Image (tube, rainbow, N blue to C red):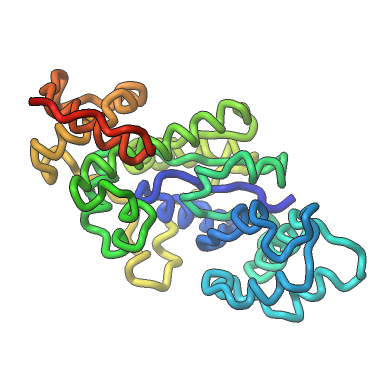
Length: 305
């Protein structure tokens, strides 16, 4: 049943690369980012209180700019409701993904939206057999990517109250929050439905990682996964799997690295990512504590003298 798999992770962790790798497999395709799937269910947008689809939902979808990327029209959406019987939201979305798979000539369909790492329980409640692949990247490289990404000012990260004052520490807290939420949700799902991929290992050992990922998905490994760039038409998506596109060791200042590690060093340790600063200055830890309190809505600790 579709959705077959959700690709999730902190934004800027390489989920687009993983999407292209999986799309190259002959048996599965992955939709572009959607954003609306769990949110609209939680808000009952276009739905009855008990989660059944109304005709209003079709209009809302057709107005949504990201839905347009699926190239599914009004008649096809109406056809999913043609028999007149009440239709659950999960069955309706499954029908949409089936239509997308048919367009791509593939039976299995997944979706890639990094932010879904924060809504895995909702998605699991809707599709109890759907798999989740959580891509995790060293947060210091994620921080670098946020700093150089033109879309960062429009993200939820940039809306946090500490972003303008300390973007590095704020990025560290945002990365930590996303990764921890995904891992905590994954524990409840178990190894049959939840799988972690480390970005650094994916780009350093692509064949081994793709073989392991294929096994988790219950698919035969196919070499086409490593040659996804040969079938891409957009220039920016033609780059093959390439290590070292971001390297905090050479591209991040020592002060920024210390700020990041003061905020999210414990998670770096848990993930086995070596720290550059085994001993942090007390002032850096106090700064991290104040920023965490502001973002999480607590009382801001007093500044040290």
